[in-house]
Length: 275
Ligand SMILES: Nc1ncnc2c1ncn2[C@@H]1O[C@H](COP(=O)(O)OP(=O)(O)OP(=O)(O)O)[C@@H](O)[C@H]1O
Ligand SMILES: [Mg+2]
Image (cartoon, rainbow, N blue to C red; front, side):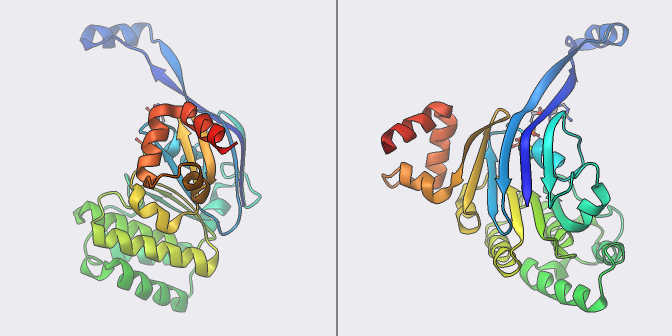
């Protein structure tokens, strides 16, 4: 379903000294340095899997998701999503995938949310029946009715994220990429969202890859974790395996904090214990 091989992304970043003098110097003699945000990662995700993509700030999660969704071109490596290169087949890829970037809305900023949904209905050529059925379901679970008539720019963060989530699912895509889909969402709504995503995952075998810093709720939805550390994969296996390795009543959050703190040492320590 999703195949990633030796994926790399380098960003060219401006190197300038502080202050106006630094900026002027940069104008005359620009200097750049390369930042390797993703350093050659490989993984496979099968149909129907729900995978959490974790890592500290700046680990490369959003960069990877941007490449998987075809928004950004990799510096090197190969990606196949349902057999297609997402960057070369951006339009077809968009039809088959749903995407949420919690940090940035995909909805039209100035028009009522319901009009955005109508536009999406036309873009994806959904039947009236499919549209109504999905809107009813999403409204009930995500509480959309309270703010459907408001433009996206007037919504609170949590409301906007809920609207974005509904928009990403309207065309019932087989693959969902969710980058911090519950950012700013209150506790009750968060639980509903995870339960709803689980339903979507189980009913339709929708493949889900999501990033979140919210470890408490992940366990209910995801069976597998891919943990990134500074652009490299630190761990890729089932949550169950992770628990097996760290027996001693630690919570998932505690285990992951341990992994972040001790990096790859923690993993090899864990593996040694297994022998
Ligand atoms: N457009 C860009 N230009 C230059 N550098 C970038 C750009 N986008 C991201 N980076 C850098 O690449 C690295 C990885 O960023 P990325 O956004 O992928 O991290 P992340 O794992 O999603 O972090 P977070 O948990 O904070 O969302 C960071 O060091 C970031 O500063
Ligand atoms: Mg990010």
